[in-house]
Image (cartoon, rainbow over all chains, first blue to last red; front, side):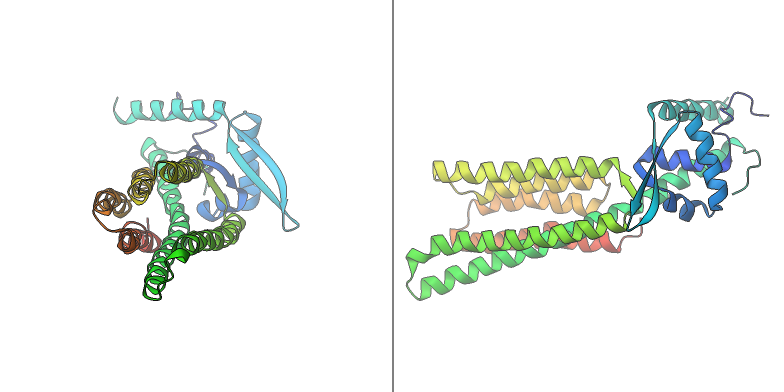
Length: 94
Length: 198
């Protein structure tokens, strides 16, 4: 239906993730889980898709001996988000 | 969250939610403002009390060294507590914002300016409280504008007024004035920021 919209971003969970990353420098996996109430496995799949597209960077580290995943948006991701929002505006105000 | 297709309105709602939820994290700034608000207020009142005691006992020669010692002591205590507060914030923090970087840079420049202002004031033998309050006013007002928290902007602007007022107050009472400026300009906005939901 919404053909012009970036299919990678036009998904509830991926859009939520990328929106958080646009306003944040770095975001922990746990924060995304808290904010979206999505299952960890589902979040991991969406993160992988965004990473493969080059929209986000994923950093794996340790905090108190527990693995920690930190996400940040890339320039390509910012450009894709801006383009997505511009396209959305065209649907709302054609 | 499901993966069904979104309408543009739903997309905007998701974006808005992500951005508005993120704002509440700026309350961490309140902890630092509260810390330095209390440390500096106590330093000012302690300074005033010390000067009064030394004047009453006629030990005028000790006023200078003890005043410097008083400020060094409170700054050292403040820095030590800040180290642990920041370590705790970083430990609990799940999101790092661009704004935090801007605020860090802003206050680093402000603190550097304050040190330079104190050195210049000693060299030129001029009063430094008006200049310090002006710099603190710049830092506080800009912080308030950046985090869009009006009480902090008003607090910052009050520092400008206190800066002008301090030029007309004698040295011993200027400490009380700085204390009042910090309570109005930092502590009250910091408590309001801490209790603010968004």
